[in-house]
Amino acid sequence: MKQWMCMNCGYTYDPEAGDATQGIEPGTAWEDLPDDWICPHCAANKESFELEED
Image 1 (tube, helix red, strand yellow):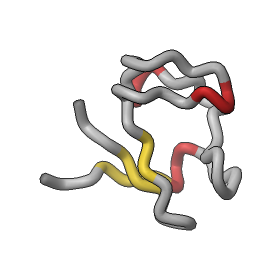
Image 2 (tube, rainbow, N blue to C red):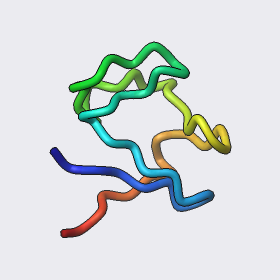
Image 3 (cartoon, helix red, strand yellow):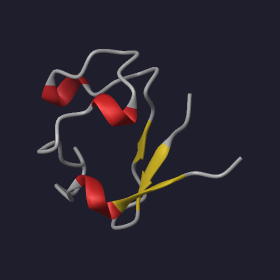
Image 4 (cartoon, one colour):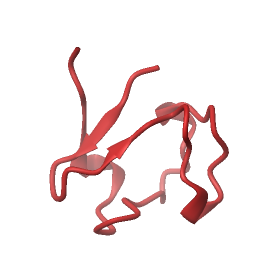
């Protein structure tokens, strides 16, 4: 699965891990995150993330 990095703090959202801090189940794709989901490290919104290139 593709991973997304926060350009503010460097946190990487890994869909395989999800985000337990906000109740996001493992296996949740980036596109399926709620629009109001925020970075668990710095509270940046989804627009602050960029797709990590392989």
